[in-house]
Length: 350
Image (tube, rainbow, N blue to C red; front, side):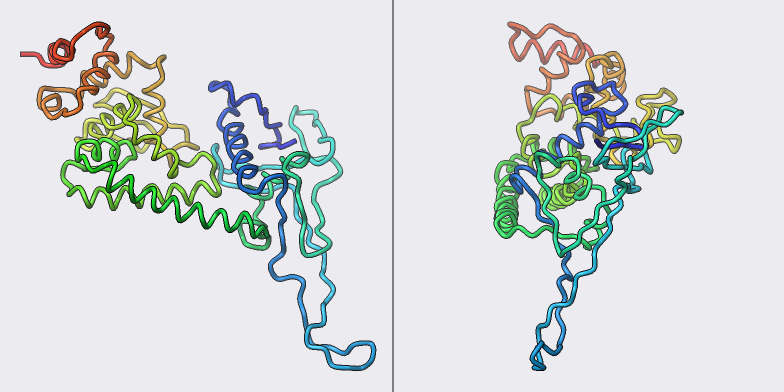
């Protein structure tokens, strides 16, 4: 069992977006999936500085260059403090029955640490999945390099994947995104500011940097957006069009980030960002406005930011379809020209 701030992680929360542990459950699910896809049934953690060798004398009195020294045991606490989704979090991995306290919180049972007696430990990704997740993503012993993973086959695959990803990213940015209009929309959806004032190749360079930085973060944060997520966004969907529109409004100063943790349009609150999500506040705001329950808020925003100049710059006809649907205008069995006209009538007032 995993404990977060002395409360059990509820795995089923992954299906309930309103659950307070939804993001933690999603992080665990995605993280474990990555570990299993990469390492198979088990992970072999090794202590990179052990076993140590020295010069010595063998039993027959001869000098030996590579005499093995005894390996001292390593004690790894099963509790770690990490900067998580709710600020500073305390993660624990219970390997026996945790103890329920009178205040309703939980603490570890009798096993509060594990001992590695030799130079390595193998963790089963089926029967010890929570321990594997804790050691890889939460324990400072792995992040600091005191533990490393020894898996030549998986390492070769990771290196091959890295080469393929670099080629795929290069092809996507300079090939798939050869169209300047699509390039700008995708770049804005990734949070890149001021695309209308930048040369296309400057946008591509920045986009590549953003994607690769996200890929690095995924190694410690399964929720980070990396190459796969970027490639998914190349298929310009309504979600991407929404993100592009929001970024345009932010670039134009119509949406403003306030130090009190809120996005505002004028004096009107658009979205309050939880402290844990401030590093990903743009993504959080886009997801918030993309929620059907917040459709009226999105419609108010679109009325504030869409004008004739904005509409005149649209090159993708499907953006008019998205605007029409967002505003509740009929689109079924309508011709493109009719949809475009109804969108202009909605946003452009003489």
